[in-house]
Image (cartoon, rainbow, N blue to C red; front, top):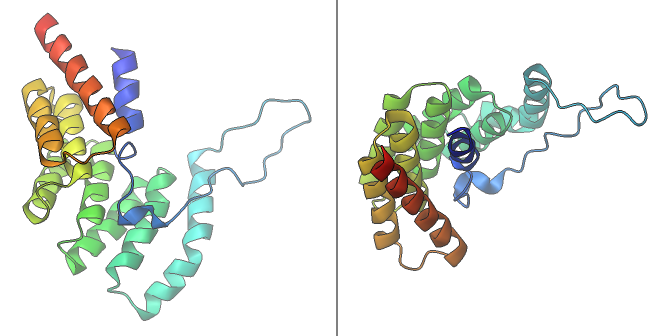
Length: 195
């Protein structure tokens, strides 16, 4: 079961990147660490990651002052904070991005992921359902809908329905992604039979 949770956590929101929010590339391993020669590298803590995110977001935040309703800019800032696990900050920027541009499906899907990471499963599902009203075939929204139903609500049937719709609505889906979804479908189907 731990392996399943690890797989879910690793894939949620990242498996099907390629949305508009992927324009920002974060650099989370460039903080200098006190590390004696030969010692294993230290993993940055959340405070270190917050400082890195703030530094990386600085030029975007400066631009935001003169253009506070720029949905793409808000989305980019949200992505920086999401990548560094600063989910509350990310939610604030993604929330403003979808307030300004409600049809910004990429920001809404990332907002859903952040809400889920902070334990707001119902809020995450609500955002994904709203995304699908604007873009019913959106791969990221359908994938995350399945993951959150499965992991957050223990709703195997709902997860299978979302992933089946993803495959049906996107026959052109890249083969490797299709194989990953099919593997999850098989895994959840098998688990449902055992339970």
